[in-house]
Structure formats: structure tokens, C-alpha cells
Image 1 (cartoon, one colour):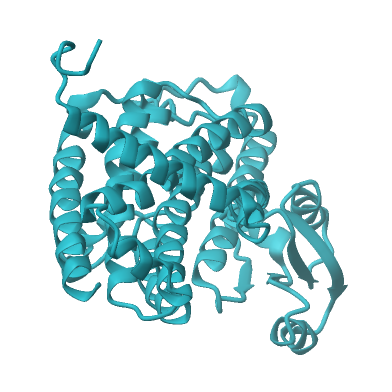
Image 2 (cartoon, one colour):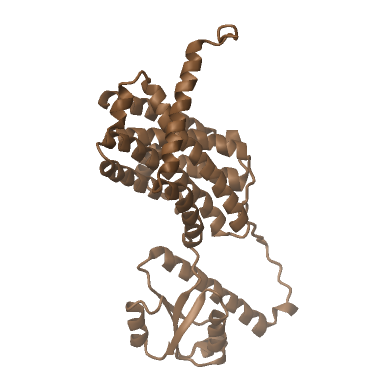
Length: 387
């Protein structure tokens, strides 16, 4: 039985066979490369485990210096509230503000709790008193968290005083509005389940963009790309054979990262995994197109590494992995529309944490689809022009 009797053109069989042999060649080269294998399979796992735990805005070791000039029962009760908090560690007590400020200057402390004299007397006589927090604000985010934690503890202390001194249990006060808080999609405000999808985006992109670009440039350096160019292999066959293995490996990394996230961090997966991998496939077309484009405009691996590093760092910082994109200036949000990280970062969190469906991420899907067509077309055009 020949291929014509099957109704399948012989040219299609030749096309599939050519791509199959190219894929075999690429996978053999990848698995023979002892330097590349750890970068693909070991390093992402280690980075995922470390970065998810390290990249957090939670502060659990706030070094505090206490300046208690009142030495009353009320001041001791307030200090004990900070001692009982898992976020604070009281380094020392002092009566000298200058000595406390010196420790703040040399980074021995993060915050000074200054309780003035007559603290308890003012509470008893005037029903109010003052305390002072001196916070190291070199890191604005950390200073904001320290301030929020400290205010929360003082408010709790204030409620206990009111309840104890005025016996509010015997006084029925009807408040006009009663507030009950509930956090959706991350009820316990766990930072790990928010960060893990963002770290996965970075790791998948490293496989799709960085390694594919290095692989093609390496062919230029060792001269094998010239040998391929003189063969009957079409340009699109060569590109498919070069990019498809890294697309498969990146999808595998995504699956493996989700398994690790589920086992080690109890990562919620509320939405459809089929939708997530479909969106990842489209995103990887963009990443692979960028890798192909960067390799086409670079003459060696050093050039492509610097080029990819520049764009990678910019894309990551503006992707919304740490701070919301909506909080950026208007001009930055306009520029950020060319950032593929932003679309994938938003979509993966929506799917995993909120259970969003296809129509909820339709704008991101359409934007990335257009992005993929444009960047792949540009990369192929540039590749044909330079090789």
C-alpha cells in the first residue's frame, strides 16, 4: 500500500520525517550536554523551593529597642505585648534616646519603642497618652510593615485597657455598623501561594527564551548551522526542530513545578489545568519567538546572554510579581503592554487562585496570541535575512 492510496501526499510524510529527525537530533544534543541538563532539570527546582520561601514581604524578625521612661505597670504590659508577638525580637532596654538611635544607625535595630514618663498617669487622668516609634525607613516597604504591625499591637493593647478599666462587658454598646472581614482567594494571606505562580512564570520563560536563544547561537559559533543551511531542509523546518524541544521541556517544567507547589506548599489549583497549559502554550510561543529573535541579532553566546538578561530583568521587575501593575505610573503601564510576563503573571494567578475561566482571561489570551504572531514573524524574517 502506498501513501497515495491512503490519500496522504508524499510531501507531508517527508515533512514529518524531516521534523522528526531534527527533533531526535535536538533531544540527543540536549541530553548529551552535561552542562545544559542541570540548568533544565535541577536548577529550576532548587530555585522554586528557595525563592518561594525567600521572596516574601512578611517580616518575622523585627529587632526592637525599648526606651521605657515610665516603668509603670501599663508600660510593662505594653512591652509584654511586643515580647509575645512572633514578629518582634527585643534586643535591649535603655534609658538613653541617643544610645537607641546609635543602634538604629548601625542597623542593630529596626525600630525604637519610646515610652515617655507619665505614660500611665496620663492614661488615668486624661484617658489618653502618647508613645513614639522611631523606624528605620531605608527600606520603605519594610518600614510600612513595621508601622502596621506596631499600630495593630497598640490598638489591641488599647482595647484591653478600655475593657479592663471601664468594664465594657457590663455596658451594652450598639454599634451602627459591624464589620466582618473575609479575604477571598487567599483567606489566610499566605504569601507563598501568591509567589509560587510568579516564580513558575520566570522559570518557564528561562527555558523557553534563554536556553533556546543560546542553543541557536551555539550552532552559529561551532559552524553546524552552515552545514544545515546547505541541506534541502527548509527554514521553517529548522526553526520548528530547534524551538519545539524547548517548548516541550518548558511545559514539562510547568507541570513539575505545579506538582512541587502542591506537595510542598499546598498550592491551590482552583481553575482548569487544561486552560492553564493552553495559555502556557501560547505564552511559550512568545518566549520562543523572543529567543529566536535575540539569537538572530546576536553573533555569539555572550551577546545573546547580555541581550536576554537586559530584557528579562526589565520584564520581571515590571511584571507585577512583587507589586501590582495598577500601582505603576500611567506611562509605565503603557510601556508595560509589550511585556509578555505581565499577561502570563496575571493569568496564572487568576486561574490557580481564583478559578477564572477562559472568558475571564480573554483579553490576556488575545494580546499574547497577537504578540506571538508578530514576534515569530519578525524573528523568522530576521533569521532569514541574517543566516
